[in-house]
Image 1: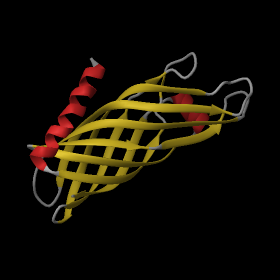
Image 2 (image 1 turned 90 degrees about the vertical axis):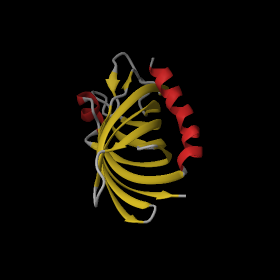
Image 3 (image 1 turned 180 degrees about the horizontal axis):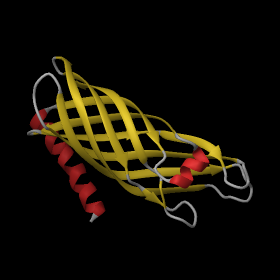
Length: 183
């Protein structure tokens, strides 16, 4: 069911290109670690840049996004350096709630995170896997010129991964500021 949802959203994006033109977006956010054990290992969080390309299907905005997240810390017990990094590949759908000077919106994204855990400890092996995730989002968009807008968003990534014996949510809360421009 999850893969079907992502495939349907990926197929809808090219259809929207012919219907409503393209826009690009760039954002910079701060993502916290969602799992308490990961917070103990990696600390609070790290910056996450994101790039996207999107289109309009009526009032709905469809955006294909990718980014990069990396966070380093110390393993529990061994106190050796470990690094968690991932590249998300998501399709997000946004729905504007109102028009005017500020445009509040709600959205939902789904896709895959390609993650890697790199350990300096000889007792722990490196891991490179993928996980399905989804991310509800709320935000506000402010038009600043014809075809250009700035936005502020709040989202939470749910992505259960099993890098070792236990499943952990490698996502978490993200606050981001960004810019969108029509091509």
